[in-house]
Length: 419
Image (tube, rainbow, N blue to C red; front, side):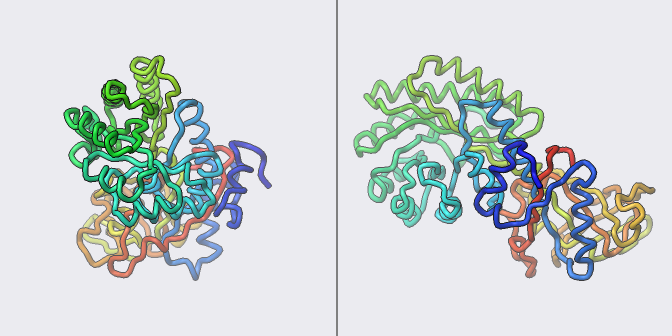
């Protein structure tokens, strides 16, 4: 059924993928046709939103990562999207994992992933979660305070450490990190001395230039700061330092290559002859964003003057929370399965519309002034690039359970071509 392309056999045999149905997509039968088939086959039953995960996109993006960063190993940030098939596919391809809690560690270990492929990359951890990490052999974590060192010394003294530092400039990111995470320059030496006095091993430095970064030159400044920490450690006689964790902050858009070029140049400038240097990263949205597509059903309609108002069965308290929390700019296209089966992509005259989610809160407003054709109750809307910080941040408000939205698996032989 599948040819060997973009690691397809590796992915299809991955944990939590191999036991599920995966549909092969071709140019003649693409994503839209597949989504229509789901709707038409279960026309009377399907009344809830659903996702489609294209595993071919994941394979293509992993290849893109390795081509761009052949010496930087990815530790996928589970918090971005914890879909089990996605985690299984990434594990099979060779990705390691960035976990921030016991539940995320448990999810990754359930794949059969070795604990030495996990970094517990949360600088402030609950004691019970530290104890759990110790019990399962997750032996690498981050810290940025004396208090965290004290907890680790008491409850997981064999754990290796990365000192999380504040990136010098994350002001051009959607979400700045410096106010919550990272040691300041004047705090570095006291923290290293304290770790040394406690008998704890500091293996390197981590930083994050901010979620959704746009100023990739911030990587250069952060890598320069990391080198200063390495030099400070050497002066203190700390000789185990060999890891630089460059965090995340970039997507899979065309600017990724700009980020890759700046990062590689900065590493060469500041760590040209560092013996045994290991560079890792914690990409989140890079892998899942474009791989997930959401389908929602129109469950209500109202016409007021020249404006069409539609209600759909997912919204701000569900997958579309990314509008508020991730500053996402969503787009959608109609699937007029009920009102016009002859022309399901609805290419006729468009009008201004408003769109609401299913809850009883007026905040649950997805669009105002969005151009769409005339649609009817029972039609569907397709939202592309819905893989980052969507379902993981959803709620059960009003009884609409975001976690229960099903995901169908496909493998497109020509990745990124379906939407």
